[in-house]
Amino acid sequence: MQRRISAALIILMLGTLGSLALGCARHPSGSSAASLGQGSPPAPTPVPNPTPTPVPGAFARGQWTQFSNDKRSFAGALFVGDGSAPYDVLADGATSVKGQTLQQAEIGSGGPNAQLAAYSAGGIYVPSIHQFVALLTSGHYTGGSNEVNVFDLSSGTWNPGGRPVNPTVRLYMKVGGTWPISIAYGGYHLTVPVGLIDTGNDYSANISASQLGIQAAPVNRQIYGGIADMPGWNKIFLFGGFGYWDAPGGDAYVGCTYDYVTKKYQLLDAETWPAVVRTTSPPPPGIRPTVECSSPRRGRSTPIIPVAPRASASRSSSTATAAVRTIVRPAAPCGIPIANACCSSAVPATSTTTFRVESSVLPPARHSPFPGAGSQRAGDRR
Amino acid sequence: MYDPVADAYIHHSIGRTLVSINPTSFVGTTLSPSGGDTPPTSNTAGEWEYYRLFYWSAQDAYVALPTGDTVGVYVYPPIR
Image 1 (cartoon, rainbow over the protein chains, first blue to last red):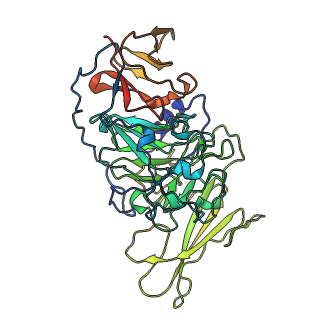
Image 2 (cartoon, each protein chain N blue to C red; image 1 turned 30 degrees about the vertical axis):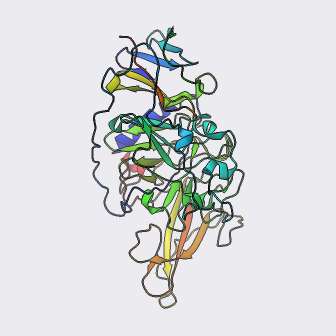
Image 3 (tube, rainbow over the protein chains, first blue to last red; image 1 turned 135 degrees about the vertical axis):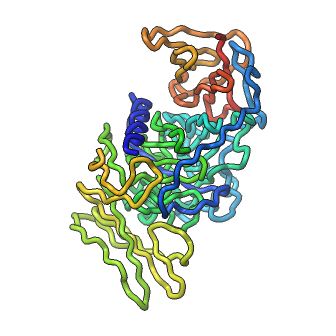
């Protein structure tokens, strides 16, 4: 397993040679009904390899041929809001997405071409499914989203089965905006979070719990070459690049995957990521969440991990320092598989999530379908 | 991208133009098809095409998706 993640990192690093490193984020669709990955990691399932519709030799040799059976482009395949929840307004609660792409609602610059291609691979071709998968892409100040769109070489069309993943609209802010601390993963870097916590449990169909059990979607980024297919695992791996609009202020220093079979993202937050060239202040070496449940009858049931507070400062409406962020939210009804939360079947309850930044120790991962994640610390496995 | 049949790196620069690069000598050879369709040019003369130029083994062809406004993709099966 560890060899696989190492191999993926090597491939990625080769791809990013000459580029900057670090980054990741993502989120929801309407086509997947898979539940959250709370159990043991599923065994990788090979993807069927259908025969492409164009027969071999269908294109004249020695010349370019435009190939499209729907006359659409990436721009035309992008999500456009229709006003329905949870794809209606941005995280500020006021900016409507109706009739717009997310980039337009965010007032990102450069249009879809900049979103796909400004210092960004925009996606990657996956030979096993004969599709170019466009995801998690952004350009310099261009905004964008964590939606997934595919160009299918077998049919010559974009999104032949519908868009695999719609954007986590309610978790996004406009270009230049500051994220609510409750949504920014770990409460860090509020202009470019490394992940977007699904606070409303709106997008669970497209998010697998992170290795640390957080239901968070990765954020789009200027990918550069920081993307690789993981054949046999049915996943695309992303790491590095400038997050969202904020180049060079933020970087996607936590790796993530997108499973093109289950249509789910996963943040790989329990891995130890290699040190790379950075242009900004170092990221927290580890973010450790704990969940505390409480109710009027029972009171607190789980102690918060004690931490040594650092100096600082936060404008959060909840408890927050540079070292600790605490999020309190209503508990979800029992039976809804939401990571990093409590449930309540009868009495009002709250879920309190505390993120602790550690300087040297990462906790063991609970479980993960990602190769390399396991019950040991990454450093111990190497 | 890498062409596994020709054992060459392929760069798509402007319009129809391709450059085949010998992986040993790193000498580049320009390919300029005279016919066929003309793909758009990605930003900075192809520099930003990244993995949107890839090899399609079923057709033994290169596929380019240069820009966000490109309708469909452009397919180039090289002469073998």
